[in-house]
Image (cartoon, rainbow, N blue to C red; front, side):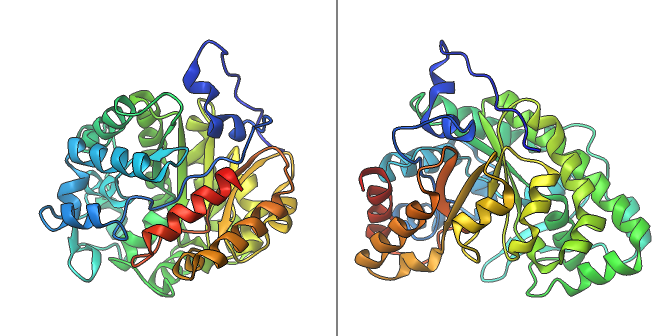
Length: 352
C-alpha cells in the first residue's frame, strides 16, 4: 500500500512547487520535468569547470557545487534541482579509500572481499566528514526560487555495497553477487551498516533544506525478484524509512522492470521507472495509487529533435494525464548529448 501524501501548508510557497504537488498526486497544470545528471559533461560550462577542478574536489566545494546546479537549472528551465554530488563520498568516513581517476571513474583501494573485511566498514556515528554535502544543499536552496525544489540523494545499500566489494564499477557485479550468496550473514551486516548511514544522511539533507530525496539503486537490476526480496528489500526499506516520515522520497532503480513492485514494497512515495518497460505498464505494476517518475531512454537525446519530440509525447500519452507523473529519463543524461536536444525535450514537456 502506498504511503499517505504529505500534508502541505498553503502558506508555505515551497510546498506548492509543481514537482512536490505531483509527488503528492495532486492535480497539476502540466507535467513537471527534471533530469538525472542534468548538470554533467554534455554542458560546455560544466566541462570548463572540470578542466580546472577534479570531480571529487568539486563535490567537496559547496560554493562551486551549488553554482553548477543553479546555473544548470536556470539554463534548462527544469522544475527541480538535484544537488551536485555523488553516491560514493558517504563511503569515505565509513573507512573506504575512495579515488576518482581519469578515464576509470571511482576506485576503492581497500575493497571488501572477505567476511572479516566488513568489520572495517565503520558505523557512521556522525556526518561531520560529509558536512560539505549539507552545505551544498543549503547553498543550492538559497540560490533558487521557491518554485524550484531541491532534491537530496544517496546511493541505496545494494549499490553502495557493490562498489565496496567490486572496488569500482562493474558490468556484471560478479564479485558482489558471489559475496552475497557465499557470505549471507556478512552481506546483511555490510548492508545494515550502509543502510543506517544512508538513513542518517538523507535526513540530514532534509534538515539542511532539501524538500525531497531520491534513493539511487543504480545497479540492482542485475538481480532477480527472489534475490531482491531476500538480500536487498529489508535494507532499502531501512534506508528510506526515516526520510519517508518527513518528505517525499523517490525510489529509483534501473535494469529489471520485474523489480518494480518490490521497489514499491520497500518504500517511496514516487517510484522511478526506466525505459525497459512502457510507462503505463510500469505504473500499473507499481500501482496507480503511487506517483512515478520517468521514463525516456537517454539515448533518444542523441538522435534528432523530431525524434525527441515524438518520444516525449509517447511517454506523456502513456501517463494519460493521471496525477502523479514526473517526467525524467530512465537514467542520467549521457555525455555527448546535444544541449539543444535537452532543451527541446524540456520545451516539449512544458509546452507540448
